[in-house]
Image (cartoon, rainbow, N blue to C red):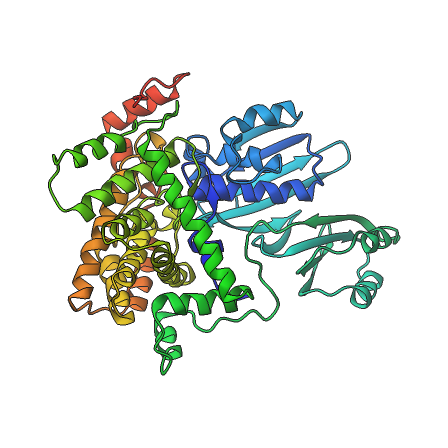
Length: 525
């Protein structure tokens, strides 16, 4: 299927805990699929990461381990037990080994997982593609493409013919794929799980070895012959001729057609998301604590400074900085946040949208429309570039968030569709080439500053666009350039802990302190 991202799958979401959506949420989704592949019965698990990828150096500190363990246990990405998932895994009698091995698949976020119990052994290879999105690319040596947006049924068998005839006469499905190898299986993609009575009948067939039912892990499902009204900015503008719709209305059109859901459902889903974002701001401003953390709770002090008129700048900018900080601190304290578009960039977009809205007295409905506008810009980025810092640097995360936010702010202030697009283009142009180099292997610094920078950039570009500044380069071309620049960034500068600020003397000292048990660098609020 062509790459038609969903606002709620790929751009604004998932709702989660942890420092990184590429690590925590994605690994949990991969492990949920592993759990289904083993029908919940796992005894021993071997997890392998490539030495030249991102995960070899970041899997523990950025939450891949935590996400995997939670997924193996069948939890959601926002489960409050996630920080202690290793303990729960041990209690469940599941043993694991993490090994750094040369892998044939060279995507920087590659997981190779071997699962064993008393009866069987299965092997799965998957990649995290950014913002919590995944793709399972091999199961038991067979090439597959599973994104977690279908019910998947795998029928392991030695003879396809009789089973295929039976399936075609008894079930409806979107696709049926035949995988022939050492462990051959029929893969069935469908909108619903195959009824248990039919699975039992299939299991009785002589050639059938096993049946595996894998549930979706994404909120918006795919389907056969899925189509969208547009997938580039140019196509959107063509679609909008004689319609005169605002950016948020075009977002509703796109998502309702993409997800086969009603426009009202699209609005309701976004309203639920902004409530979670608002809760994160309130939680952060009350102060947060967490043991494994570099930066303490700083936003409450910023709030005091703002209220006592000690700060330079206007109310919108300072309230934005405060909100961005609050959200990032909730993320770093394992609280619930929305990846927007990623966990590492979860502060910039909602921070500046809520900060601006609260200063100009806009209500929940206006924030919802602004966030939908941001989501549609994110769709174009997800379709033609990436949100993964491991692939495109911090430009892909905070840069993307800033471009999305700029368009949202224009919508929030009553600007035109053309001004929203100009603002997004300007903001993305300003963020090309930003590297990803977290200090101490934690997604805190310079991540906080870059989220603030993305929000400030968005605010500036929105005002420039509202004043009809020329953006010159069309949005589609800027997104294409993002992809090209990301491909040229050296791998040591893409969230590997091998370059930039990550390898300064001070960063290495901080990293060493964090490795002590308990970590001793933490500053309480």
